[in-house]
Length: 391
Figure 1 (tube, rainbow, N blue to C red):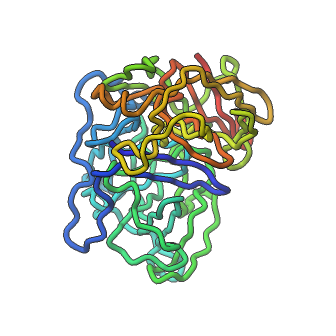
Figure 2 (figure 1 turned 90 degrees about the vertical axis):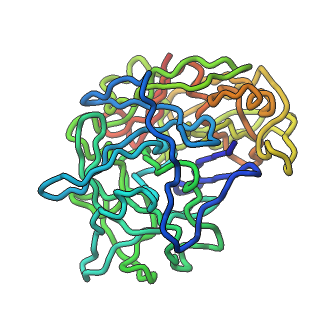
């Protein structure tokens, strides 16, 4: 099993921890091999519509609580004949923009953006535990049944990144576990570091503007339904046993927020949590596969064992009061031992968590497995953004 955590820290960051026995990202210069051989489930998925697409538990080996989508990606030329359906792309409420592994076949066919001086455009997207470095390309992607042309980052661990990017960390931390990341947090561009050429010469880009080269939320570029996303239809999962797999629907566009509790966020997509006697920075994050919380009273798994990073204790009566600049919501949840949960052989758990000392409360994907519909709004719904919570 693997432990994933996507969080926010000033800008948007990605934190990833691995359980022993799982492989790391490749730094070889040999021919790339597939990141994940899992495919899109053939049954049980809702059909895509003009404003929605199915979400499913990733079929990549060794992953739990990983909501994924399949994207139809094409080279945006006049013929639109070079295309690929790419499964197991992480749906991430904690970042912005589409990133693909360089091992995905279509990534080598997409045309690179160039700067005003004619050099190729590269991006470094920095995470807590590593960074993605690679070229910025243009792709046509299908969201539901609608097509949009958008800048995309290709994360390539075989490239030498500028020193301003690496900071002594590892490249492509997501690479072994899914084929890419679809970040849907607000419409703004991603705040990455951009370079004219791969050698480290900074490139100055203006965003958001029409035709911007900077990686940004593809949903925002839709002609309609571009004011938010809503993840619905996920089941209420037993905290004691979990579920083998779950499916749901990602809807593009918030038609009305009147039936939801609205928690307005700051510009970084954060709210506050009152939890365990502390006031913490909080957020909902589908890219985190557990609740990552500052609670040392729950027993932790051994740091050298197969469940490192998770809780091995139990507490069925946890809760946090989440508050935005307007509105609040009390989120009840349970913590069950990772050892107990993983022994079931299931893949989706509403009670998986881990100890994260500090100043944040990370309501990861388990929060979405309590029968809740949780969305992110912006634009005509709220400004700069908000979380929407409904039954």
